[in-house]
Figure 1: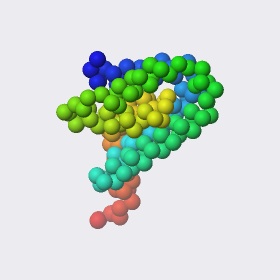
Figure 2: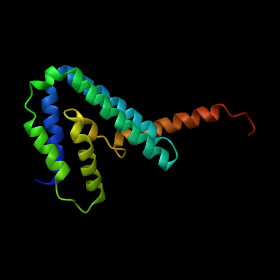
Figure 3: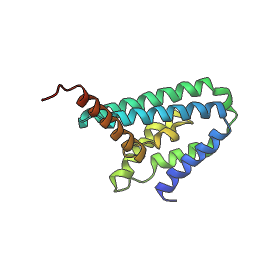
Figure 4: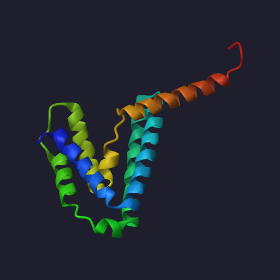
Length: 156
């Protein structure tokens, strides 16, 4: 199985498991949406270093929130068989190092998220290059620039 297919299978397996845990699924969905928004805001900033730092903070915060949600819903999660989820995550994280940097970055992301446990694949699938994040970042930048333009005195 190709690495991209394994990553997709990991995410699909997580979605299948989340369907069995409605309360935890709601938390993961909320965390994913919040992280998307934080990433969009990070990408709407102008400086490359600030974008990277803000994105890193957003992912670390998401990881912390998922761990907290896992503790809150531990009884619900304990009823699941996570064997396949773990196998797929380990395969993604430890597969052969591909030459393409995007794939290497995806593997590093899986390695970062895997210890977080169930809920990680949903948030790990977010990337700063996703269409949603880029589109939202553009909207935020336009709103910020528009707000700046409204506050400028006439003639400057």
